[in-house]
Amino acid sequence: MEIKEVEIKKPDDMNFILGQTHFIKSVEDLYEAMVNVPNAKFGIAFCEASGPCLIRAEGNDEELKKLAIDNAMAIGAGHSFIIFMRDCYPINVLNAIKNVPEVCRIYCATANPTKVLVYESNMGNEKGRAIIGVIDGYMPKGIEGEEDIKKRKEFLRAIGYKR
Image 1: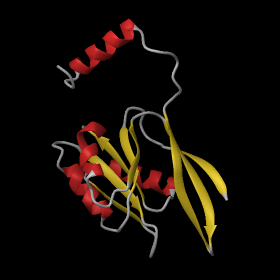
Image 2 (image 1 turned 135 degrees about the horizontal axis):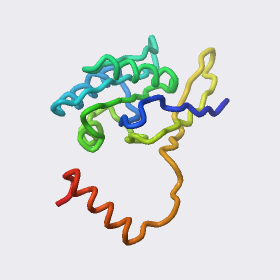
Image 3 (image 1 turned 90 degrees about the vertical axis):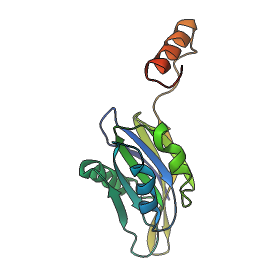
Image 4 (image 1 turned 180 degrees about the vertical axis):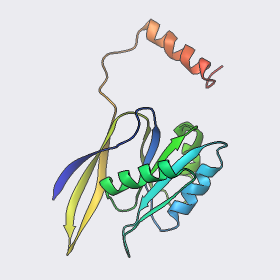
């Protein structure tokens, strides 16, 4: 038994979603959830947990697809998936992803520096891995004050998420 930290390797401003799903069809259904966002570019990788135990991949951008495959290989946890996206944000697709019937959970949806905590164990003659949690960004540095509240509200209105 061993616990490992796997750092998500990506450009600093790139958003991704990390989750758990099941069934070989997951990668195709996740593709269908993502493709409905106009102009979104994305890459998906899914770690199959039985049979040939392959990393299944889809996407409409080869660079993002490779990024997803590389990170999925590093994580190596059965039935995990990772989606990297450009020209869209997790808020644009998260409900669609959660509504994919095979999706069991979402660990994070972020652009922050992220480490995935992975538990590795022997399962007979093979090894298995599970995601036990994520470190998403940094610890709080304080409590927001009046000026911070004002900046937050202005920012949300400036990007069109509040009126």
